[in-house]
Length: 197
Image: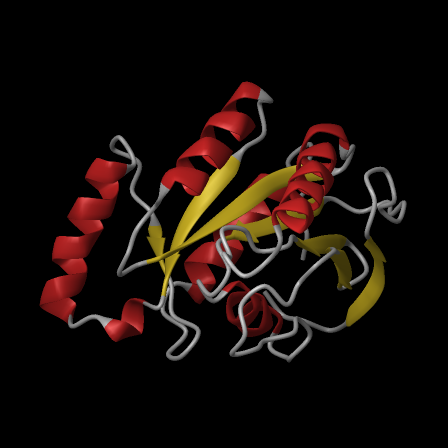
C-alpha cells in the first residue's frame, strides 16, 4: 500500500460523537502497551498515532483518513490499572457503542503482545465482535523481541489459545508482517470486488 496522504479527521469522547466520514473504517484495539500506536505509525509510514512510555494515553476514539478513501480508528487501550474504574467504564461504553453502531466499520484489528498472548479482555472482545457479526483479525506485535525458534513455538501457543486461529505476527521495528497486514486490511475493506488503494 502506497501512502500518499494521512489526515486527522476528528475524535469522539462520547458515544455517538464520531465524525461522519464516507470511507470504510478499520478500528485498532488492544491492551495498553501492546504497541498499538507503533503498529499504526508503521502502517502509515509516519508518526500520526501518539506513542508514549506511559500506557493509556489514548483516551478517545481518534479518526485518521488515509489516501482519501480509508479511515483508521484508534481506540483507547484497555486493561490499564492506573486508570480509574469510572474512566475504564466510560471508555468501554465509548468503544462498545462505536463497535456496534458504526455504519462504515469493516473490521477490527485486535492487537496482542506476541510474548504474552491474548488475555481475558481479548477473549471478551473476540466474543463481543463475533456476537455482533463484526470481522476481526488478531495481530501479535513485538515479534522482534523473540528469537526465531521462540517465535515459532510461541505462534503455536497463541494459535492454541485462540482455538486454532493463527495470529498475524508483526514487528514495528523490522516491518515483519506489514505487507500481510495491509493485504488483510484491503480484503476487509473490499466492497463489490473493489479494494482501497
